[in-house]
Image (cartoon, rainbow, N blue to C red; front, side):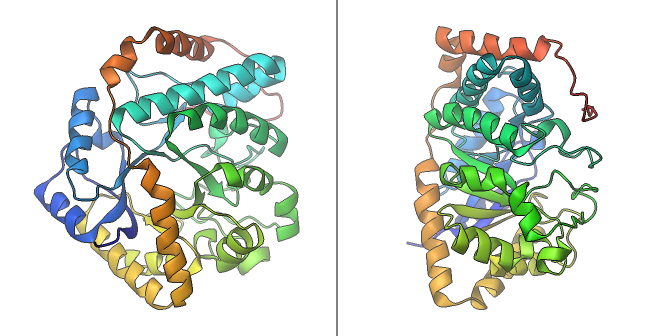
Length: 364
């Protein structure tokens, strides 16, 4: 039986086209990630996921459901506060914040599981820092690594109850970046020793609780000659995989982002060579998906056979439990326990909390 490949793709619209269905059967990507353009209500979302799952050995279904401004699934599902709102609450009432973070994580997992979505690209483990580009902003769980670790841990404890996979991001930390990597390559002038004292702490603390870790497209001249982290073998293979003994899968952020240069084929090749088990492309264009398939093949061909084998086995071992069957979202929405938990979390989104005096608030 043909193995699934080192690829996570997106599709163009709210229905799976015949061309996309053919690609899924032939190329066997390990995941399909859904965006707002794919989602037009619960009934349509359920139908689309059913279409994707009709593929032999169906891929895992992925999504970005962080809460706040990065939340692909919205009404009639839970309206989640931003992660940073929980951080503000924790400074006022740590016990209540811990309880609500656990509840929010549990709700998020329950909703995704009911729809058949097996992988969530969350939590964000970046540390919000003053003067940085607002691309992270309120997506962060705090303004120092202790806050991020504490708050993300509480969210993860609730989320993991659902059986949905969490992917921590963006390794090795995007919080200090002065540019948005969707548009340009951020440069962070810190040594590895400086990163280990600050940005890397949340990733190191939670690595054994995260089946997946997503890379950041940012350059660290003091660490690896300015090579973007997604292409840095020193960061992904030597540090994360070897030194930290990270057991999960490493997945690239979207390869089409403006921080990277070169063709998508070359971007995929370099990411695989650096240590990414999976590369992600989110344009939904078939020519882009084909380019990444070619780049993956080239990258694997330039690696030692042992590493290729280990990566393939890791993908299979880690992702298999998350090829989950849809449950009943309608039944979940009517469940009294779910509705009570949801009310508690949504009430926080309505509250006015004291602002952080040290970090400017960002807008959605």
